[in-house]
Image (cartoon, rainbow, N blue to C red; front, side, top):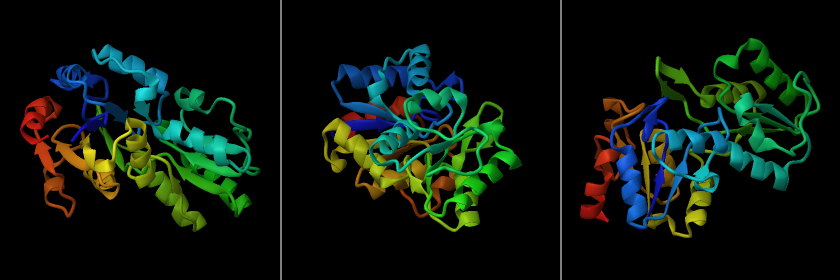
Length: 260
């Protein structure tokens, strides 16, 4: 192994609380010269905000070191977007889509793409039905999922992520979403390309057995599951098996020295 991809929420921190040992593990990775990136399905904020959040936990990073579904979608829209996009993302994430043509925020037609992220408490029937109407108004409209994470661990407990809302729209409009985030294989391949490493040389560290572990394995990466964040003991009983399981990211340096 030569490089590492770190999931963020649930691996380096839980919501607004740092996970013990994460700062030291990232310092080890930097000091050891191990190429690494941060790979997250967070769509509630921009990479600039995520850089500041990591800095608050003592983890230096640049925007170029963070891959998010929003940045991936913005790149796709600039290269392939067939027209105006309807964005179902929180205001804090909108800077990632600067310069991209968008429909009016109240429009129910005219969208060539409908982009769905984690709206959190901004989701209601009206918002979900508006996304459905935009898709139904244009049979050729592309539904874009900013990741397919089912839920995440917030300070007050588990919360639904973007995946369930995308699934509802897929069922309602009878078309499959283009997934630009985890667990899509192309998302992991883009990370490998940015590291200039082949998939088998990269370790994905995550707390989600489906989006982090199964997704990374589909792209040929090695995987490490940590028992923090959304991890539940039943994750060890399913068909997806990580290459290794650790109590937390704090144990990564010791495991790496024995396994790399």
